[in-house]
Amino acid sequence: MITGILKESGTENRVAILPAEVAVMKKMGIEVMVELHAGQKAFSADKDFQTAGAVVADRKEIISKADLLLCVNPPVDDDINFFREGQVLCSVLNPVENREWLDKVRIKGLTVLALDLVPRTTRAQSMDILSSMATVSGYKAVLDAASLLPRFFPMFMSAAGTIKPAKVLILGAGVAGLQAIAVARKLGAVVEVFDVRSAVKEEVKSLGGKFIEVEGAKEDAAAGGYAVEQSEDFKRKQQELIQQRAIAADVVIATAQIPGRKAPVLLLKETVSSMKPGSVIVDLAASTGGNCELTENGKNIVAHGVNIIGKSDYPSDMPTDASKMFGCNIINLLKIMVDKEGNLVLNMQDDIINGTTAVHGKEYISQRVRQMLSV
Ligand code: NAD
Image (cartoon, rainbow, N blue to C red; front, side, top):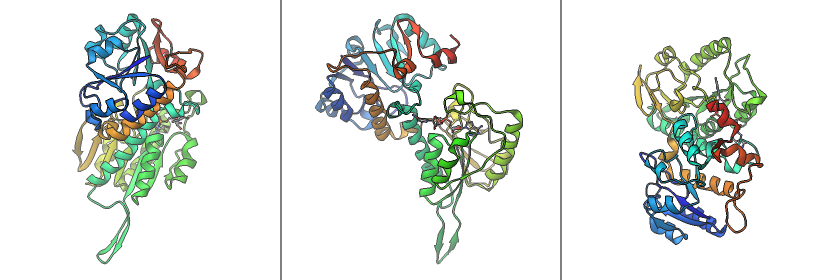
């Protein structure tokens, strides 16, 4: 099989595979082509890919020769005319956002493997790109907040007096939130946490955070470990408690999401206006509407003296390690899709492959894509 690694467009700095992972693919019997300058923004030169055994070529040649195309974001622009039936494309998909594009490539007969649809099961953990990228986001969000905050994070006892530790409030203790708790604690902050899933309570405590429980949270075992929409009564109670804690906080890291839906609004305008001037909100849910009512996606704004960072693309700001993790996740997925000779074998009976395949044979396959797109 020939695999082609495509260069990302726009502001994306990551690349799907770094040279070290190319070497692993070669050992698996896979031929690798890499688009010219694909790794440049992740600090990997074309010659590094060549040393690892890849052939560097231009985009059209790669698309015309590769059986499997790998990229971080789906190539949604002009490439569609050059794809051919039976070709396999593997990237993060965002099926709702890219539904028209997905429909076009389905009709064309491509197979699309959506890395954001890899099931969140124990067996698939090593292939879970959402977790790897959320780890980067949680880490970077805290560092960004710490560098903007006009105060220290840790407690200091010095000859110039005692400095109290910063208070960090984390909304949502999924993968990004848990990472944010760990980093904020390492920097010496006092950390309080909200989530609607009771399962995270122990994890929060073990990381040194204080879990604040709001009674009456709705949980659904059928949601696969994800959060579900809450009742109006719960939302009101939660917003009141969050307001109390946010007013006392120096930093809020907001990560709460509900898959396939708009992010829950947890920080109201009135809450922001009561927060301390100089405090910082980092809203990682910005691209799905934001957890803060005032968040503007992709922008840093100041409202009522509070810095609000609306940012959902931190992994692109840390492209070397983010690409490393991304590539390792792909290699682990390839291990269940490639035979001993390095040929692609898609076993649709395998729950990971079935769950990850958005379209194949001109049909929608993944149950989650069918649900999200109502097809
Ligand atoms: P996510 O990005 O979907 O959401 C982030 C967090 O926000 C979640 O913890 C969610 O409960 C919380 N949240 C949603 N609505 C909220 C509200 N109104 N108020 C407060 N918090 C709210 O989550 P994620 O990081 O993608 O993780 C989702 C689930 O997947 C978790 O159960 C996690 O443990 C599980 N997971 C499993 C695996 C695996 O086994 N392979 C890997 C990663 C994650």
